Every structure is written in C-alpha cells, then in structure tokens.
Length: 125
Image 1 (cartoon, one colour):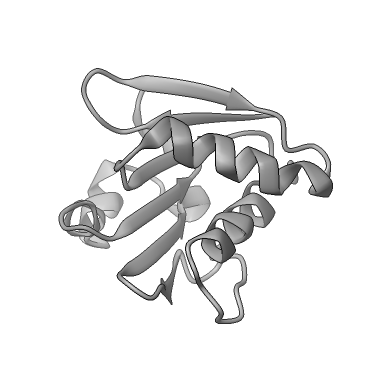
Image 2: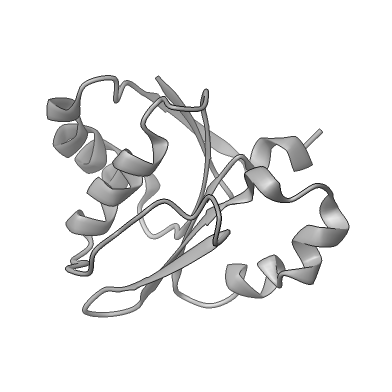
C-alpha cells in the first residue's frame, strides 16, 4: 500500500495498492486518471514496499526507455520522456529543509517536468 500526495491546492490524496507487480499497470492508469495534469507526486510508504518499482512503472507509462534505478544514493535520477523530463528523488538521506533547498529541490518543482519524490513526508510535519 502506498500513500500518495499530489501537491496542489487543495491537497488531494489517493491510496493505491501496489503490493503485487501485476497490479502496477492498472494502478498507474488509476493514478494518471486521478491526477490529470498534475506533475508533482510525493510518495510515502514503508521502506521496501515497492515505491521505486512503482515509479519505474509510471516512467514506462510516460514513455521512458532508459534504464531506471533507485536514487537512494544519488538523491535524484533524471529520465527523458518524448515530451519532457522526469526527476525521481529519494530524500531518505536529506536531513532537514536546509539540505532540501541546497540541492535545489524547489527549482525542480517549477516547470512542466514530472517530479516523483520518496520520503518527502518527513518535511511536512
């Protein structure tokens, strides 16, 4: 189970079950229909629950053909779609809001690119 926050006002949430790989294609379709034109997504779930695997499924849906991997150590991975870019963040190693700003996270949120962020919930409280 992944808790997803779509970053817009008013804040909308969608809970989807991605516990099995065969559920991902349908879950991605459900997510994309739910989000409309939104491009910033914050994912929250337990470590090892499949967030990165699900984000890979979203990337494939959006047309990414590059090899994809977890950004746990790089903090951000960039992928290209036929029409824009995707920035996949894992903020596990970011300790505070100051570090978040220092990596330029706010700048990634501007524009028409997709931003997928894991472990962002620590900065919301």
